[in-house]
Image (cartoon, rainbow, N blue to C red; front, top):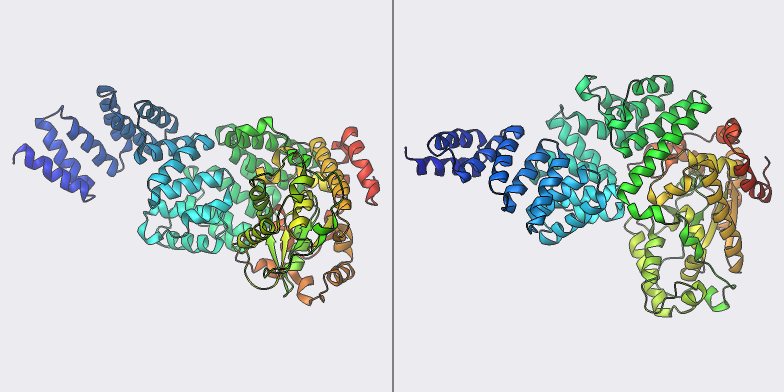
Length: 607
């Protein structure tokens, strides 16, 4: 058989996905033409198709050195390095391709994936966004971009990117990626179904099973999570950081924190990405608290926040120069004028109920009670109001230096468009005719914007002992949207609390018609029937028995609760979290207590 025929046959095998046969034919071809560049390149592709990525990388590296001015040679090398798990070398190879003028999808996708793998998420997002513009229907590009959005905590942008992807048309690896980003986008039921389908076909995919375990635990389906975890063999190769995280969470939720802590013995936390390191340390702190080791809790939290800061700044480097509470500078200087307080007359739904409070004040507990009522539906911590405020700020003539002038300048038509934009976004998360409860705790710092758009809204403010609030915030792994940098220490959290509550006390008093009902967490937990009766009377609704059995509905949810309280609200009411801060009083500095004391007294609590 002549060389040309052999070459053509090899090419046909390669195009048909018959990597082994293509490699055999190409080796025969290269016996006669050992320096043929195209043949060597095809052989590298064929052996990569057989899973021998290291051999493919060797060949591609040789070709890149022989053809240093050819961008495709560096792109091929970059992809081979990615397949070998060497993201740093891949990023270097794609950088060479970029310097040579590469700007096609193959380059943009490969370099974006390499930057993601080296935790350079902002740079990766820019490249992947350009790749998506070039090929908006390419599944591999859409999945890569969705994964990057998840890392950047732009969760609301993920669903439009992936919702119409058909798993049946994807490779197994792509199906695993789709399941993960579905979970990040809040498509929990779809994610569960896809994970179950994947694992039914390929039960040995342990990392996918561990992701399923984590999702089930977040859905408060702890027994199911434990059964799935039991199917992962405890072998050295399978004890990944994800295995440790899943094991610790499930074991702690089953009431055995001491056993959960054993998962961390001998672990080198420095050898893993900072985001995972932070998650493991926050989980370690939860386990220490369950066994009553207060000092160990605080030591783990200090390390967790340090890792979380590094991970956050890797994703959003610009944040290191920003005030995490900078938006509090936007405030009214004068009381709202009478025409601002006139309810809008349009065909839109009734103005929402805004459920607010400093984070960890008990808003999730109250939210679950309200959501159990047949005439209410809760939108749980979705930044819809923030998105609409961003639209308002783009209106020509908006004055960023004077909230009074900016709000006064809104025309009836602009207000109508903003209200419509709010409802359009809200309906992506909730549907139905029941009255909307918009639970986004720090909307309390947007009272002027919200009341201008919705003057007939009702407001529910949750209060809790400021020291318990500060301690609980410090104990949580908040993301950027939760103000992670504001909660890095007890002192920083106390300062944030004081700034937010001072803003609230000043601003809500400038809106004379604001309908406000205050609920204290301690009263709600200890006297739920009386507190709920008063609250529902404020909303002009009758109490329904299901509201006091809210925890049963939580366990049956097919959608996760997005706040750190997801585990607590799956349990009956328990006063155990009241005065928890006293167990940690030794860790509250004099400065911290000095900052909080005026607010402790103002809200009727004691030190």
